[in-house]
Amino acid sequence: MNLEIKPALPPQPHLKWMLGTIGRTIAFGFGSGLSPKAPGTVGTIWAWATFLVGNYFLSTDNWLWVIGVGILLGSWVCGKVSEELGKPDFGGIVWDEILAFWLILIVIMPAGVWLQAVAFALFRFFDVIKPGPIGVIDRHFKKCDQYNNSNPSNKKKILWRGFGIIADDLAAALCTLFVIALGQILFNQFQ
Image 1 (cartoon, rainbow, N blue to C red):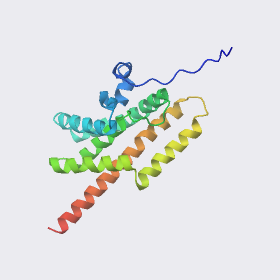
Image 2 (image 1 turned 45 degrees about the vertical axis):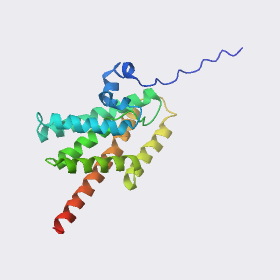
Image 3 (image 1 turned 90 degrees about the horizontal axis):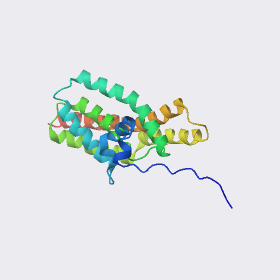
Image 4 (image 1 turned 45 degrees about the horizontal axis):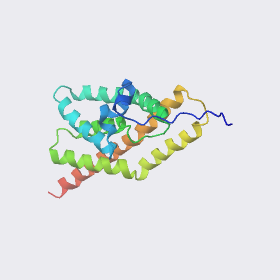
């Protein structure tokens, strides 16, 4: 008779599970990451909507503080939740998309809805396809995470994993801003 105890499977994210801790709630973008289809896109839409509402109450300096603290807090929260789920970058963890898109909007605002939509489309493209430096950053952190999986959990590992989850989205945000700036320069030259 085999009495081997098998480890419990990681939890399948659902609303009650997410609301169990504030960390899960933040990591899953206050529920937007629970979307069964395209959670990153839904998280980015949530970021867009909350930015437009929050922009009535927060200055640019306030937003920069929110994003800065969000990156620090998010590195811990996203790392902790991904470890809990047993996956290095679970798709439902969308705090990284939220922070990155807020950063894009901070830079381009005030902008019309069309430029905001272009920024949304470019960001989603860069985040999903991960071309060039974005893919390098993503692969680097996932490769480091594979080597660290043999070690027991520790705070540095959790922070590093969480920062890795956020880093490729920040790179996607920078690429988005670069393309928008380049487009504006070219557009202005040909007018």
